[in-house]
Length: 258
Image 1 (tube, one colour):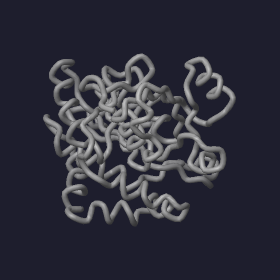
Image 2 (image 1 turned 135 degrees about the vertical axis):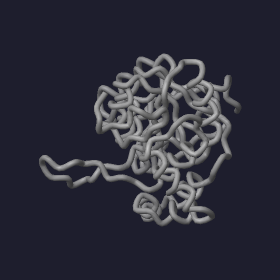
Image 3 (image 1 turned 120 degrees about the vertical axis):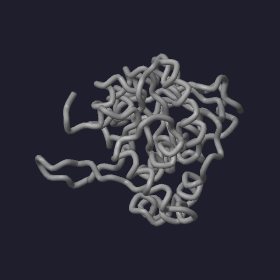
Image 4 (image 1 turned 180 degrees about the vertical axis):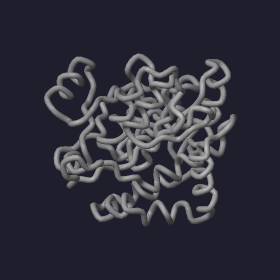
């Protein structure tokens, strides 16, 4: 055990790809939280019965070949989807018409964290949309697998980081989503988890307002995706819990609804 980590506790929180790797090394159940927008998009797509296959970024020839092998549609970035059509990282681009269809989803933050933790006992996707549902599923898996839980807020990347600088930019929307999930998990919580819960609880009725005016929220709004921000800030409107099985996300609670 490293004396400077959160190992003494059953419930932990770690940031980004490095945090996901740390959780994987411990053999924890992992909950990936990327509110704007990977997690919210995966939750919504699975809610509609779509099959989502995460793939490490960028959207390149290797990603295209992977989608072709799966006979799946490669999900584009919002700007590309606006130009060429098709689905995007916008959760609102998925509808009940996508039931049974396959999609390959790349994401600089969410999919990258999934890649780091894909071999853990269970990898779940959480957001504000399904916070209570994912916590309930994680509590059940914790008992069944006798494993601890790490919640991983993904954060963002600085686009202009210099050499030897850490590119991670923590995002409050992911921290608040992680806090909501952590507040519903059972077991001893690390100080880091307790502080994260405190941030969520302190947000109170301002949670949606904080997400709206966060750096990530303003970035999406300025690009014309105000409805995405409003939607992703809603709480507990989805009951599905995406879990990684055989390289794709399925509903941990059973067959997704359409």
